[in-house]
Amino acid sequence: MARLVVAESNQGGEMVKEVLDVAGEGAVRVKLEHASMGKRDRAEPVPAIHGQRRVWHVGVMKELEDQMCSFGAAGGRAALAVAGPC
Image (cartoon, rainbow, N blue to C red; front, side, top):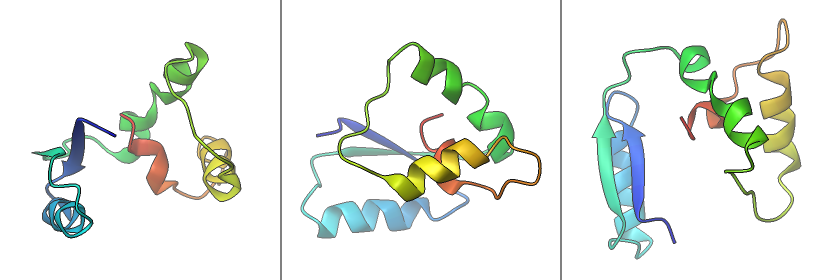
């Protein structure tokens, strides 16, 4: 279980807190941050973190993996999940 969840205060952060409370995960601390950079800038370090094997995905998440792979491609759609780990 995560010890800390960081959510954007300007993009539904309060909802994240509420959902975790309802799901019974109230023991997880939620830190709200105001995003001052765009998703692409925040996502920039993600490939390096993966390359250092500091990130593990449990299970098969084909749609997430497709989004993450297409995020940097020219014309690729914005992957909301890519900015999450930053």
